[in-house]
Image (cartoon, rainbow, N blue to C red):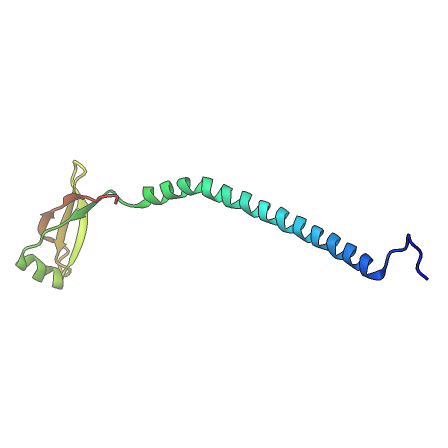
Length: 115
């Protein structure tokens, strides 16, 4: 005969399962909150990352417009970039045999949009 104060094996199993479930849910909540803090920190650092990437994108480019004869000379020679004394860039077509400048082409600065 069972005593009134006794607890059955089924009741003990239910209590253990409940405690394990509580431990599991606490661990899940703790892990989730840690991950959310990591995500928050990443999101706070994202604008800095975007600024760094934007700073590496050039804001202007240089373009040289070549005539037909200059394009033909470029096919046989090389294009070298040189600076004038005032700091502006020049594209010089150089004859590879004599290493003399065949023609000079002024460089045009072009603004690049940041969109």
